[in-house]
Length: 287
Ligand code: 1OR
Image (cartoon, rainbow, N blue to C red; front, side, top):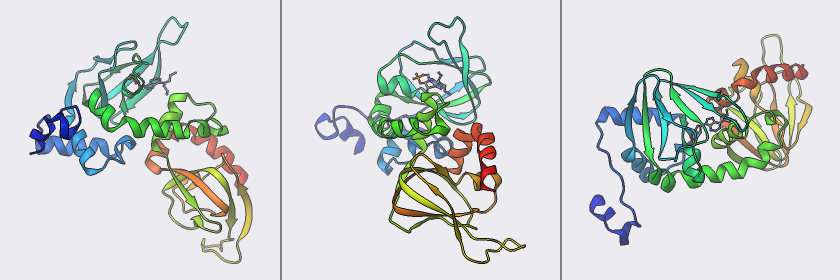
């Protein structure tokens, strides 16, 4: 059986899989909590099962300090429900400041596990809450490589993007967690005018043409499309449909080889929500 195998260091590597028994109802709740968490989106079936097996439910009462800045890292936490305030005492400052709040979603506590560093911030529950805790060994075995790999992969690219310059490094790291890359050959359509929009895109490499077809009074395309812009490395597109919930207003076609990094609507809302006023202001230029 798997459990007896896992005791055998020769066959399974030198660790024992952690298995905390769970009810069907707990299983369902974990799966739901992990669903909109990018860190888990690429686990294969076995790794996903191992993660779920190793997770431990933590019922937290309002006011509990789950993580203390400066402490050693032991667990990574996924929020099932409840609100949390993340505070940080920055170098030279007298008082800690709130750097982030979480409500019924998200995760925290990965940094100390990934970099063997002290906890970078304090996390306090502001309501009664339910968390799923994943131990350090399982986190490092199953989640660390991909997470730190993506954060490294996209770090310098995201740093160079004017739109994201004002963000904290940690916010860009969370953005990196949510990104996937895709390449297109010359002339391939990335998004098509009139389609429903579900993703936001950044140009990682190469360039793309922005084409627009005039529409008649009832909104149907009529006439020939015209090139109205060109997008280069570091530019973004696809934000409008996500903000306005209207169909795509233009077609984006690769101009030579094109590489984009894209994120889902859910990631866009969660991570780039604070930039919506910026997007709105700059979308005036499209007119
Ligand atoms: P940790 O293991 O260091 C505290 O434990 C956790 O708080 C940390 O992992 C992150 O998961 C989470 N800076 C550092 N850690 C943060 C931040 C943050 N926000 C959440 N955590 N900043 C806030 C960025 C919006 C940067 C502040 C300068």
